Image (cartoon, rainbow, N blue to C red; front, side, top):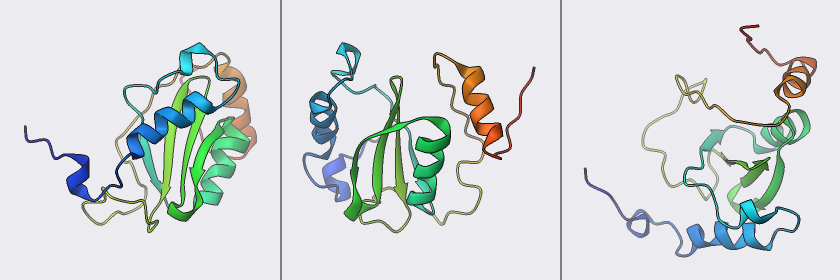
Length: 134
C-alpha cells in the first residue's frame, strides 16, 4: 500500500499537532483527553452551521475548537471525537470525487456514551428519523 505524506497533499504544516495542542489546552477534559484518539472521523457537510446545531444542540457534542475561515469544527462527546468540514471550505484537502447526497452512505459509527437512551430521546424528540431494534 502506498502512503502519501500529508505535506505533499498541500495540508498546512503543523495541523495534526494543532489538534493535540488544542485538546491539551482545553480545560475540564480530564486525563483521558491528553492525546487525541487514534481514529477521528471527519464528515463532509453542506452547511456547517446547521450541522453544528444538530451535533451540539441535539446530540450533545461540544466544540473543542473550530476554524471559521476553513468552515471546520472539531467536536467531543464523552471522549468521542468527530470533525465536521463544510464542502467548499478552504480546509478541504481530501475530496477525491464528486459527492452526492446522502454523504457517507454505507458508513456506520458506533460510539459509547453514558446514557444512550437519553440521546435516543433527544434525537427522536428533535424530529430526526432514528431506527431502533428495541
